[in-house]
Length: 579
Ligand code: FES
Image (cartoon, rainbow, N blue to C red; front, side):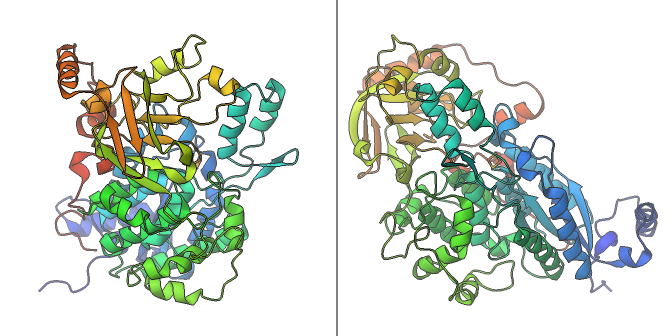
């Protein structure tokens, strides 16, 4: 006769000594060495994937947040046990944080599965941490609930508000153009990021927080609460409580992250004018569950989903203003006619029930616009296809200069980031404001691991002449806090032999946002000649050991989320494991 009750708590997933009784006895005796009572060790266990780090300023307040999570778990009858995983502090990682996102996802997945965890709270926030945790949790298959760091507060420089990191770039651009002195840029450096929490604009971290809530993986109303606000601690406590309630339920990530909830997430991404990085991350999360985020689908949704929020980097306001204005709930209510409302959430309610519950909440219309009077009538992102990007590229049109949307221009090509750094400010660089800057070899297969380098600087001599924007094209990514007419994620990337690798300075490139096209205007026979020449060149050395070897052997292209090929689909626990 089989035991009708699957093992819970410490008795779950025992170490295999060939004697289950001995394994649980040994585990309990070692757990008792941590001072837990027998009553506590009988409880179901909520694991807390815990990611503070001396190299992650955004997670500085996690010790206090953890205490609140534990309070909620204990109050609901569970035993909270935190465990560390890889933490990714965006600006402290080389070559890029994306390069290590899959390492964090693997760490998260394996530690959820390997340890006696009945449900898990995912504590993340900084850019790549939330997608990494959602990827790992989707594959691990246990009930999981996301808690984010929340955004930083802004500060002041004179009469201007300062917030990471749109203002970082804005003032650096002024500094490069000679409009800001050395002393002033030093003063600004000290005021851009002054509290714990994630960047204070609708960058990648804030976008992914809003998408995690839209997907249904986070308690309603918690995505935008500032990091230092007391409401964030209450949200942490509620998250801990909910994690206990989810134990034994069917609210596993595969039931919550579905084609329908991914469609909802794309809608919200477009309405937020959110980060281009989110397209990559959503594709990776979906891929873990055998689902696909199609760029054609993105275009279809983009044509009928307006931009509703007036937030930096494309608008005027910061995340703390968005929270005070009504936050994500207000955006969901405006989008309600377009959303799939029967999607389940970790909250226990459907998305539609959650939206209905907030019907009378206050909304500040200077920050969150009504559906019939939007900031922009169409979505913030658009995918482009053509001979330069057969599998697609992304343009954040809400952050771009629409006067540059229909344009044919001369290419000025940089073969690598090193080449870019060497020549972009050369007074002798042959470049005009009507040219198109092209960066090669900055995609997922490149040595630089797809950095946020797509925001190519305006050449110094043009910046000093007052040029603020140019068409820029690359296989790199762009920070969610950046802006400009910047075409990103050209796929396949140059390092894996995509057509981008064949572009040369002087070629003509045609961009048409209205036609969703990006074309290299070079004859086929000339491209064939260049391809043959490229194939005769000596092969680039690749990594021979360690994580770098795993990365370069396995990383997929941007349209597949830059996940590893062996991690897609087929999640769940080890054979015989219950959920
Ligand atoms: Fe962590 Fe921007 S540096 S979110």
